[in-house]
Image 1 (cartoon, rainbow, N blue to C red):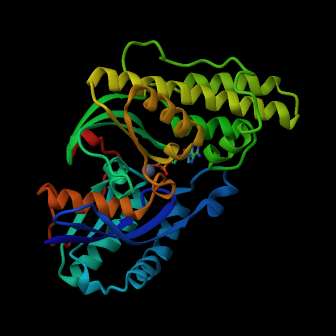
Image 2: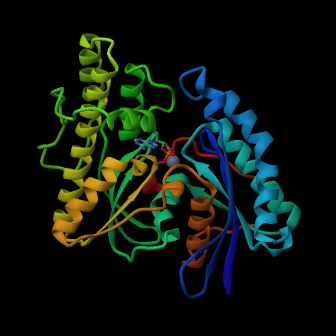
Length: 343
Ligand code: KG4
Ligand code: ZN
């Protein structure tokens, strides 16, 4: 038996559709995927406009699904189930993906599977060329979440620590905005930081020595605001502030991840979520893990940020593990706020 699942991701500003197959033995396979990013649509507003996001998901979902099936040379009848992101995320945007997936599944008389967006991120490294084994520590760093988790198996997640205010991605995005960079700021700030000195500005490392695995990034944003007011308008000093900001965020993520490994005694670290695409974070984590003999796993860059593959994968892995409710449903609900601990 194998589990071949078409997944829809529509929790925020990316419409992702993908087809994943989990065989009874052997690693999961990504058969095809398609993604439409709404960055251009929201750029003039400096952030995501929920109503515009929902309307664009409506336009994209089915054409993307068609192109995925075409790429995989498969037909709708070849699918075993259809998955969608149930939450957390923007309510209207989630409703589009859920509506499309459940309707399509009902029309085909196949089951639909609701997926937690963060579980998608958490399991996404299983689609990489170097998939991890359980158990591992997961550093989950996205635009809305920053968490350290102990992962013992599919559905067996223990929260070790999380942010008490802003997420790491938010810290990148808000700091980037203060530096006059376009939305979404994270990748732009990272690019500008390449030209700057990371020790140019003294910025706080919140909760670095708190003795627990929680994070706080709200104070960093305030410090960046204070420093940005002092900036001369030169590109050079903006790059210095970008580099200093990135260094502060990366140092906290790095040290807390190492503390989580020490606390759990585990020898494997998985990094997931959009901030996991940050090169400086990847390089520094790799060095620190090499020094400690810890195995480090990343999803491929394109699978760090939101995508349909992680949703199809999480559904298929949960189904295989007997955890997913793969029901022939004709109704659905979305969960815009949904702590991972509740799945
Ligand atoms: O996981 P994701 O695509 O969406 C959420 O679930 O939130 O993460 C998006 C976040 C944004 O804050 C974005 O700025 C950040 O990931 N990000 C980056 C980089 N690429 C994406 N942050 C720093 N450096 C990057 N290269
Ligand atoms: Zn995400």
